[in-house]
Structure formats: C-alpha cells, structure tokens
Image (tube, rainbow, N blue to C red):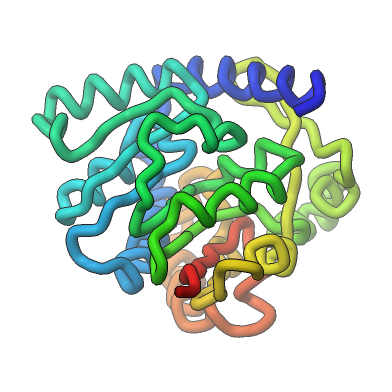
Length: 274
C-alpha cells in the first residue's frame, strides 16, 4: 500500500474504534438495520452448510459473529479497529463463546499474515467494510487460498449507483446524489465520530471480474433498493403503511433486474470452484 492508503486505514481504525462505544446502542434502536441484518443472514444461511468455519472481515463489535456462532458455526472475527475488537472480546467472554469465536486485530488488506489461515468454509464481510479500501482487487485476489473447494464468499458492498441516494437530487442535495458516481480513484469523503477518511464504490461486475479465476457467482440481491437506507431514521415508525409496502416489494424483487444492483448495498455470494 502507498502511504495514503496506510493513512486512510489508520483513520478508518480510529473512526470505528470511537464508534464502538455507541455502535450496539444505535444498531439496536434502528428498525431498518434490523431488516438489513435479517436479509443478510437469511442470504448466508441459505448457502452455508451446517457447522461451517467462517472468516469474518470487518467484524465490528461481533453482532454477526455471535449470531452465526449461536447457529452452530465457528467464527474467526477480524477487524482493524482495536475499539471494535475490545468490545467483541468482552461480549464473547460474557456469553461464554470463547471456544467458538476467535478474534484478531487484522486488516483485510493483510490477510496473508492471518494467525489462522484456515482454509475456511466461508469468508463473510457485512455492511460495506470493504468499501474502505481502494485496493479491493488485491483483497479479493487474496481470498482463494483461504477458502476450501466448494466454500462460500459472501460480501455486502456499496455499489457505484444507489437509487435512493440519487433521488436526493430532488431535495437539492447534489453532492449526496452524485458522490458515488463521481468518486473515482480518489474515493469519496466519509466521516464517523468526527474522524474523516475516504471510501470507494464497486459494482457487482467488478467483484465478479476480480474473483472469476477461482470463484463462481451463485447469488446477487439488492439491499435497501426499495426500502429506504438506515440513515433515514425512524422511517418505519413514522410511516408504517409505506414501510410495510416497500419492504414487501423489496423482498419480492430483491434478486430481479435492475433492483439487485442499485440498492444502498448489494449482497453477493460466490462458490470456490473445485
């Protein structure tokens, strides 16, 4: 990585370490985040064999790691943010999951130096952690040795075009409406808990191309394509009729064109070829 990439990683680590103090509380109180997690988990469980081993990237405070552990899987949960890892270790100890969830302070740009290289039944990354690097191609190329033949890769990524975000044009929010499409190689500015960093956006075709040598796509669906993004807080509570209607439409059309690739996120899964 060039110096600017290392600097961005440090800023990302600092930002999400600070957020660890409030992350679980915010997550617990947001109906749309609950919907997003349920959608992602349903997607993964539909493809994952019982008793699998999972390498989780950008695991945060371990919300998903704990869920999958309670579903009977073993998880090696990695993150670059020490604050997130510390909170995860606290939760693992408190819930007596030490033998099922292991943790490691490790960037997904440094998977060659993982303490446990598996191979795993699944690599999993939720909620756009992978958008915090402009070198996603190199990250994806590092997956093959870490996954068993027939194993799964499931990633949740921010695409270059989001229908809801582009609609912000009609509210006069031009920077928000076009930030993904205009971000380019330099990325787009982002900030969490007062710490500024940059993020990049990737289409499903980019991920398919970079994984094509060893992996075959098996599933793609849009997330928060018709349902509003979670940053539109309390939408479900303020507009329950609209919320139920939009959720039903998204659940029906989530894997159809064009809805599968124009959401706030997309969920994409691959199988490693034998």
